[in-house]
Structures are given as structure tokens and as C-alpha cells.
Length: 323
Ligand SMILES: Nc1ncnc2c1ncn2[C@@H]1O[C@H](COP(=O)(O)OP(=O)(O)OP(=O)(O)O)[C@@H](O)[C@H]1O
Ligand SMILES: [Mg+2]
Image (cartoon, rainbow, N blue to C red; front, side, top):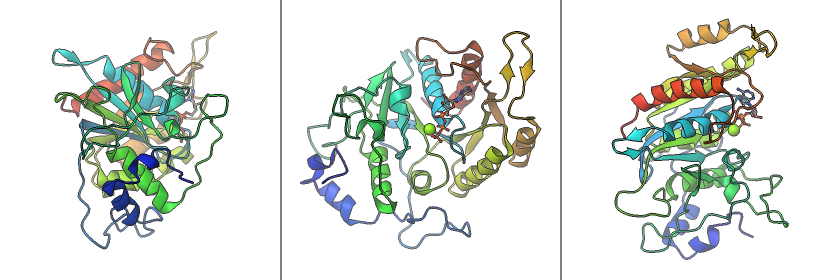
């Protein structure tokens, strides 16, 4: 049985055969080498652009559950209200969290139909067509998992893959999506792709950062020391594979008491975060409070403080892209 819902369309396709026969491009099974040495055997790895995508921004952290997906989604929505010349900025959102995709739910697409495959001529035949909501084109492993029998998406379907399967799926999500969407005209495509990274510095993060030409990474942390330790690992990995660090976002920084309006640092002092920023020689892109409704959606729901913080982060990101 195929684990790839879109595999049948590829089965008579040379590119699919090549992909399944060859080892993914010089990427180790086990993620980061222990000695931190990134010199791989075999042919040199060349980074390449994602087809029909002008700029790529990764949202990452070493640690799980710190708010990457929340910030990636809000960043995509914040960027999409900007313009590129006389037209709105075209934004895409790629969920690279193969084992725990969140973008279908965060973008209100969990009940959407499976993505279509492109027809037409090679080399664009059989590519995934992104799903779209709030004006953002989205792709996620979550769209490709089997649906539950009663129709909706099945959040309990586990992805039980290791090493090579994960790398192949990552490469397909990176290079076999047609970001021109439903309008494959000459001028279509997207200006900026926000990539929601999985936690950690494993296979997916390494495959992505070695193969894709990335403008830079936004690193998310919470104030706790345990989160900052993993942030250091994440920053170190990106720097070793020459992905620029755009800066750090401090999420769940404080909580504003609704009765007395005082700010409480419920996850402890933010001094360690500021120290980490200095030691890593980077900058703070923004600070988000802990709020009851963090996911605003395109209609501008959620909290005003989150929207303001996201606008600041979006401004920083806009400076690094070329629409
Ligand atoms: N500023 C915030 N205030 C309140 N809740 C938040 C905030 N940021 C994120 N959350 C909540 O924290 C949880 C984890 O967030 P999210 O899924 O974005 O983290 P993640 O880093 O992507 O996790 P994973 O590593 O599992 O992918 C979610 O329930 C989200 O709604
Ligand atoms: Mg996530």
C-alpha cells in the first residue's frame, strides 16, 4: 500500500522513479552529525530556489510547542496585507512538520479536499496544487493524509516513517508543489513563502536548509532557559548551512492581567532571552504576549497586542525580501 496519497500519479513518471531509486541529495539519515561537521561525502550540495517562489522565510526553533506554527500563520497573514507595487503581496505557507502538521487547522482548511495534481506537460506534470484560504496558498502533509470515514480530516492518522521516507516527502513538499496555484500563467507564483518548520534539528530541518535557497530564518523562543538552549542549537545549525538568521521572536513573553493591567512574566524573567540575543549576535524581531486567542485569522480577530507585534515582525521580514 502506498503511503503517499499522491504516489499513484507518479508511478509511470520518470521523476518519481528517480526519486525513489536515488538517495536524497547527500543528506544523512540521522540528521546532524555529532561533531557538527557538515562536510558530506559525494557530490557537493547546491541550494536551489523553489519553483515559482521568489523569497523563502523559515520560521523555526529548536524546541517544540513554542509557537512556530502560530507565528508562521500570523506572519503569512500580516505579510499578505502588504503590497508589491500595484498588486497585493502574494504569500504562501508551507507546513514542513510532517509528523505534526498544524497549518490545515490554523488556516481553516482541515476539511478541504485533497490537493489536485497538475496536468499538462513535463516538468510540471503531477505536481501538487496548493489549497488556498484568506488569500494564502498553503501546502501541508496534513492535506495528504487519509480522511476519516465521516469526511473530515483525521487528526489521529500517524505518519510512521523514518529517514529516507521523511527526506523524500520533504523534497516533494519543497520542489513538487506548483505555487502558481490554479492560475499557471506566466506571471503567477508567489512573492514570499513562509515555511513552518518542525521542532528540532533533524532530517527535515537539515534537508530543507541544505537544499533550498532561503532568505533567512525567524527563530521563535519562549522565555524559559530550556527553550533558549534549543534556540542556540537551531541558530547554530542554520549558520552552519549558511542560512542567515533574521532574528529572534520572544513568544508568550508576558501576560497582561485583565483586572489590573499589570504585566506578569509568567514564564520567568526575560533576562536570559536578552542575554541569548547578545551572545548569538542577533536581534529581536518582536515580542508576543500570552493571550487567550492567539490565532487571529485574516479578518483581524485575536488580540490587538498580537496583531501589533506581528506587524513589527512582518516589517523586519519585508526588508529582507525582494518582491
Ligand atoms: N502567544 C501565545 N499565547 C497563547 N497561546 C499561544 C501563544 N502562542 C502559541 N500559543 C499556543 O501554544 C500552542 C503551541 O503553539 P504552536 O502549535 O504554534 O507551537 P509549535 O512551536 O508550532 O509547536 P510544534 O513544535 O508542536 O510544531 C498552541 O495551542 C497555540 O495556540
Ligand atoms: Mg508547529
